[in-house]
Length: 298
Image 1 (cartoon, rainbow, N blue to C red):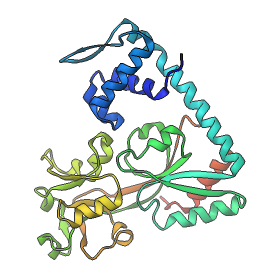
Image 2 (cartoon, one colour):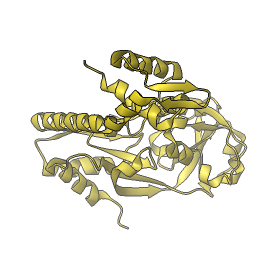
Image 3 (tube, rainbow, N blue to C red):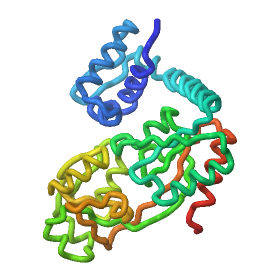
């Protein structure tokens, strides 16, 4: 019997969360879709894996048996998939690197140029990640490394090379009353609706709504976006204000959006990250070395 590894990952998420709603948010799918997938797996295995109740999802005997083996099965498949991707990259001489928004700002091109000097016969292919699943391509092995804003989901599973730190600012519609001020304090924004990343991104979302500086004061979400274009449109439309790295004023300048310096909030850090579980290669090592040369001195 063949089973889609996607179904096994869905099973593991539900088993670990003990709750369909939480598991669905973690997997970025709807709860009805997740329920359907779990039933499909149960049909294929011919066994009931969960006891469903108002309090959550409890493993049955067969479910517990599967849960005991699931990590080994999926880890083995992940290793095999990464090995295939690495072999394909070696054959095509393409290094796939993920990034969010403006990547490492102006350092990005310097890093690529330094890598090309080390590996003139290789090409770097940059793949943009969404704010809804910033680390998904890293976890799947689609990219071997990524330029990421800290913090991000499952950060503890990655090596980090910090490249730069910059202040955060606030972005708002150009006609917003607060846009008349040259500098703002974070406390001035506490009652403003905020443009946010999806809730399942956890600490990543919290960082970009300024949760750590709100003193427990609840945030009003004006819109949820996953991509820069949608984010910019929501800001310009007046759906809410948004925290942004200072460099956003350079990379995402628009006449209908105002960027203002902000005090009372911690800065944003960009790092090159790569999975601890991945097999290190000399090519990745050269890319890391190129990034280390460009990193701000600390």
